[in-house]
Image 1 (cartoon, rainbow, N blue to C red):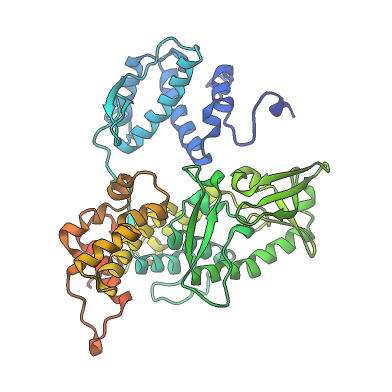
Image 2: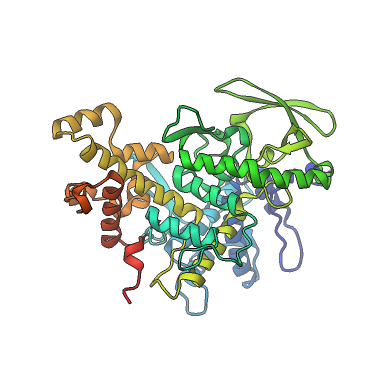
Length: 482
């Protein structure tokens, strides 16, 4: 293909100037530099940021490689403060765009395509004591104001109304189509139960999903491939048993139906690219052995299979080829990871429409909020297990932490964060001072019969956190008292 010969691959952005010209140097950066190895979502976000800045420069009669430091500072003023801009952005969004521009202009200078970097830089001491270079225009007031959490019961309400089509009274709506309900609910519950990122959960193959065991268990471990994680390190994730059951139900029902329909219509036969996996070798380090459309045989370590390539993997089923990609659309084809944002948006919009008259603030949720909420829930549960259920003395608690780690670090490991400060300051901001407030030492709620279960205790603790912290959605804090 012509694109392959020029080094342009599927998913690489191609930008046109307002006079419909393609900049060869800019295309080289977008398709052949380190930018091309960024995650798909990051590439989309950065490309949007480039377009806005390039349009700003075009209005000044300049193209991207003619930018000066004054242009960048003027852009910062227009983007964040100017009354002439009706779509100003906050500090966090500005910093993301600045990071995109910094990457571009560092490359342009390093490859000697520009002599001067228009992004002024200065030195600061990083988290680990190392001196690093950061842009002078970076906003220092950026906070986690856009980070939100849901308690489990608020998340369940969002799922029931937004994804299951329930009414405000809690009953199934007779007008709800429910075509993809099993898929959408299973995916949302997977994110909330495991804390995996959107792309990590969205790119799972069927052979990577934990299977229910006859001997039971509350949580089941799975393995995320290195190629799909943000840190590019493989890690173990855990999913609650009921959620594993939901995924199994989706695979055996809705997913099987759309595959049979696609096979009957010959959709898989018309695919331009398909790698039919003939067998899998290895246990911990599994390798996929495949044959493509042209009869070329190859093999790929599952740990190294990137997202785009995973969409091409098929296996031979009873009625013909079947995708290994877990989440499928109604046509039986891989559901693109970015498309889940629309599913969550539509579900939140339905909650607004259905619950707006009975709740002060109906629940809303994004895929990444599931990850934040998982972190908050797990921290409370781990503290509860350590301080209440296990009945540890201060000395025993210290020994337990020496052996198994502090709950904060346990959550850090579950999220796959390299830096615990990210876990504390952003994901767990509502409880960053949990031990100072001695929240876990509060008396347990009273219950009829004098018995308080662990679930009730955790629910009570989360309700208190919601009352005392910004950004945490909980049922009792939002219901109107008519």
